[in-house]
Each structure stands twice: as structure tokens, then as C-alpha cells.
Length: 145
Image 1 (cartoon, rainbow, N blue to C red):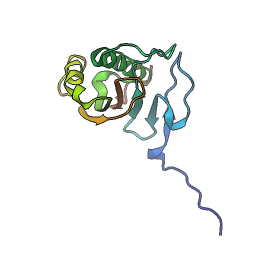
Image 2 (cartoon, one colour):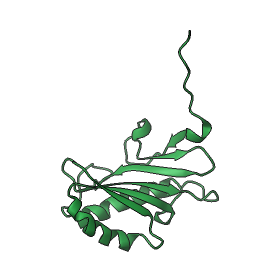
Image 3 (cartoon, one colour):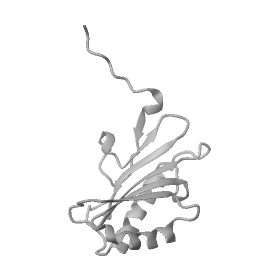
């Protein structure tokens, strides 16, 4: 008996999003992936407060690091044909869950109502205070940048 062949269904296939000044995508660990189906969802994982060119951590407070992280997220979304207005959900990883209020203050200045859904997870982030993953619904009429 032969081994089963696992081929993902077309709606489960994805394409990495390539960005200048960042290392090339490495499979599921890409800065972002785009689904192949008509929904055109863009999944952007693990954005951190690092300079994309140097990898240096930017900012020393939750507020500063959140702003840098959201700027990184915005750049990746733009490359993928989306904007922050297209984000439907964010997951926030905080080194200290007590910083949720500070994150939300910045969140409300960057996103507009109706706000994307958001969830917080306490995590060990190895030297940073915040990490953000997001899902955006890319408008079909808007080609990638």
C-alpha cells in the first residue's frame, strides 16, 4: 500500500508576501501569507517592534513598541494590497497582560470604528514587550502593491 499524498485544497493554499529589506519568506514563517481562494485573506504573523532593515528592537515602552509594531504591520499589509482599514482581527501577545490598557489606548488611535476584533495572550517574548498578528480581508479590486 502506498503512502497517502497530501495536497492542500485550493482554498487552503497560500502565497508568501515578499518585502524589500526583509529576509526572503520561509514557508509558514513568512511575514505574511495570502490565501488562494476568492476571500483574499492576508494573514500577517508575529510582527514585532524591530527595525526591518537592522533587526534592532525599537522603543522601550509598551506604547512605543506598539506603535513600531503597528507601523511594521501597516507596511506589510500595504505590500499585500491591504491597509489597516482592511484588518478584521488582531491577536496581541504581551509580555505583561497588565499592559492591555496601554495597548488599547494606542490601538484606538490607529484603527477606526468598527474596530477589528482583538484578543490578548500573555507570552514570553524574549526581550520585547508586544507582538501582533493580524488578518486582513484584501479587497478584490485592489491589486497587491
